[in-house]
Amino acid sequence: MALQRAGIAFGPMHLLTAPGRKSGQPRTAPIAVVPVDGQRYIIQAYPQAAWVANARNARTVTLSRGRRAATARLVELPVEERRLLLREHVANSPARVAQLFVRSGLAAEATAESVAAAADRIAVFRVESV
Image 1 (cartoon, rainbow, N blue to C red):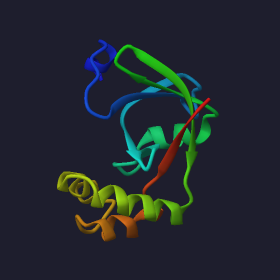
Image 2: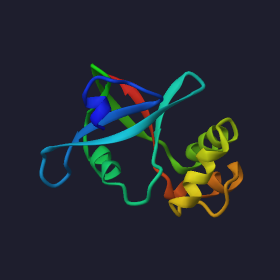
Image 3: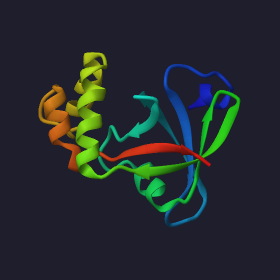
């Protein structure tokens, strides 16, 4: 987070800022914005991540990358759409992506099918420009 705040962008990492669902105060978390089929998505990688509850409650969020920031709307995908997207994302990513879902306890095995089967436990948001 410190590098991003200092204006140094790297990889798919962004800072997501949303009002806290209880306090209303801005809360910032590092997240990866993943491109799939011309759309941008944010995929929950850790169970009970606070940013997920804040994003669900917020009308808009701020996504920052390096010195640039933009307001966006996050639209949570229904479970069946998540399955398709998660399967494609894991199948087309390095093995460490599937392993992250296993290490965090969201998926049983480091395979595209196992991660897709866990879609009901993994929040997926489509990033839309405002």
